[in-house]
Every structure is written in C-alpha cells, then in structure tokens.
Length: 211
Image (cartoon, rainbow, N blue to C red):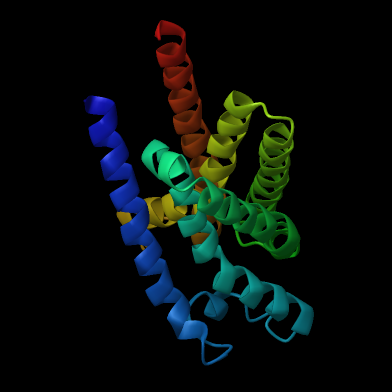
C-alpha cells in the first residue's frame, strides 16, 4: 500500500512539474535572447549552434518526461500494448536522436564551472547508455532487464525536475555562490535520482522473487 501511495505521489509530482516546466518554456517562444535562463548565458547566445541546440532541448524535453511517465503503469501496458510501444519509441528516439546530442553541446557550456560541466556530460552519457540498453533488451525479449534500464533512463530524464526542486527549496542568492551551487546541484540531482531508481529496482526484484 505504501509503495502504491508513493507511486501515485511521484506520478502527480512529475505531472505538476512538467506543467510548470511548460509554463517556464513558454517564455522562450518569442525567441528573446535575454529572458529566463538565457540571461545567464549572454556569452553564448550569439552562437547560432548553441541557440539551436538550446531550443531543440527545451521544446522537446517535456514530451520526453510525459512519454516516459506512461511506460511504468502495468495497467496501461496491459490494456494498450500497441500504444505502449509507440510511446516507448517516441521516448527512445526523442532521447537518442534529439536530446542526447543537444545536451552534450549544452553541457560543454554549462554553468557551474568544471563541476557543472562534468556532471552534465556524465548525465548525458548515462542517459544514452541506459536508454540504448533498455531498447536493446526489449528487442531481445528480456522484459525484466528492459524495465530495469527504463527506470534508470527515466531517473536521468527527471533530473531536470529534481534540479529545480533543490534550487527552489535551498538556493538563496545572498547565501550561496551561484556557480558553485549550480554545479553541485547537477551532481546532487543525479545521485538522488539514481539512488531512488536503485531502490525501486531492488524493491521490484524482491517482489518478483517472492511471487
């Protein structure tokens, strides 16, 4: 019962923060180079390649979050197998073809100094590896391994949400150095999400063994 309740809260949180991200993203639809996050990236906004990858990422990441969310409902899977496959492919292709290349370029110019850059690049590499593994295992018919790596892939996908939660709850401009906080937050988000994924995988394995 506790696991089911936690799952409901997690789904609700992801939906709410996805909607909030959509609201944040909407400020970039005017392609103004001096709004939101871009105010902190004035050194690179004149680079058309960086800007192209930035817009590609922000306009596709929410779809990635919502598409991934549908893949963890056993009821949805049982009743909508074909749709599950279609949404799963959208999730995988979105990550591997669109967001992994875009985030690699963005990561090279990340805030947070070398701490932030290495954190973002590691996230990007793990994102690609976990997603490829999940896709490869389902092609081989190995459903348990597919689920395991999908959980890990989605854990990296949702670091964007964890990052913003930590920033909104903890960061105070008069107390913390922005660059250092930003870099450490990148690592904290990844560690928290992968730890949660590990616990979920271990719990699922225990339940499977008992049944």
